[in-house]
View (cartoon, rainbow, N blue to C red):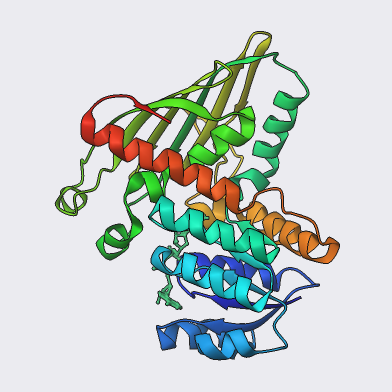
Length: 326
Ligand SMILES: NC(=O)c1ccc[n+]([C@@H]2O[C@H](COP(=O)([O-])OP(=O)(O)OC[C@H]3O[C@@H](n4cnc5c(N)ncnc54)[C@H](O)[C@@H]3O)[C@@H](O)[C@H]2O)c1
């Protein structure tokens, strides 16, 4: 599969690494409005540097990966629909639910494969937990707690164009909750604040607790933060009538030191590249399979629309201080 990568920033680099590690995929070309970024990445993997117009008229390209800034996603997905080629797009589809819905309509009409970058679904341990929930290991789920703390906030430029914590960060957790439970929320309630002065000035929050009442009865609690001193904090706990399932943090190494001072272990893996390396590779494989077999990917644009709908309701709840119905 000849892949054109649009966006050579933090996550673009992660996708380039995944493509390079897959023998049936080739990084054909890189597009970025930041020319040096495109050139650096392309050089590393012997790919071409293209402009956006060249990328959409190049017949050698089989598929596109969109890893550019959020505001570009919906337009670029629509370009993929127009040229009738498969696309993998990073979350979120757009900052506006309406815009995402019109984009999803076009994708549906065109019939292209359009996969969304909810990478956590492809983490082996998260997938194992989901499969045990589905196989009734712990009976019906009464509560689900999802914890996600980044090791450090992104740049303020990034924060300002990200749409805020709910659209940018917690959107992964909204998707995880709906996916694990096979359910959607009836209502959502948010409490959030900004501890970081720059994030406060940017009128965003960096610490948030969310409660969602799901249609089938489970209560979901999501905890998010932009700064964890011990690495990338990624944990899940599903509590059911017959037991509990947990995915704990993955640590930098597995050595446990026990001495007179106590028992210590290393920090959690640093961030998304280290923690979800396998997941990024697995999601690429799934994208390629969907393309080759002509089947809908297990996570598609409709999941992106659902997660955005929840992010929008979360933003409303934060403003009103009241639960928001969906
Ligand atoms: N799934 C994940 O784990 C994950 C992690 C990080 C970011 N993301 C998502 O990926 C996207 C990019 O995030 P990032 O952290 O890599 O940001 P980034 O700022 O590091 O990189 C974005 C890149 O896009 C380029 N760009 C902007 N407009 C463009 C355009 N019109 N055409 C081509 N290139 C353009 C920028 O020059 C920049 O190099 C965001 O939507 C973000 O939500 C997902």
